[in-house]
Length: 175
Image (tube, rainbow, N blue to C red; front, top):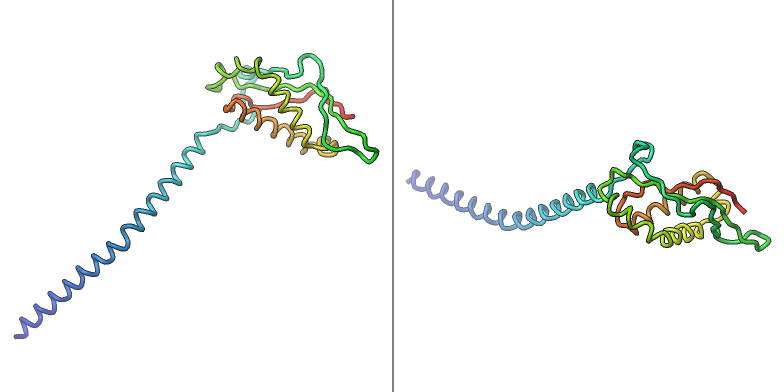
């Protein structure tokens, strides 16, 4: 009799174990699938971001792999700055603006041919960007870097490519 009672007790415990395992599987598997799906989406987003845009440091590109195109021609361009001073006078920046292209970029061959037809759009980006900054902001080193970065971002966005690696100013005067 003791043997039968032990067998029944063991069978009951095995049955309870199977039922509880099934309950755990029913509750954990769907949440594990959702977690795996979320992790997969995050991994895909990170992979896309890693491959989407290459950030170049212009100084790391050999000089023979760069091409410089002037947006203002041989002369300087005059661009209006944001706001007025205490006397109500507008301020301007007079500068030559050029862009540096990376010849080694995959998009260079195709996109560099589009630049001559889009010079007015590029000049508009330059003009609109200067309109966002005051004279005090533009005359600082940080302000000039900010202006260049804004222009570069918008130009890269226009061409949907990062073959443009820098925006350059030369012969800059402020009025």
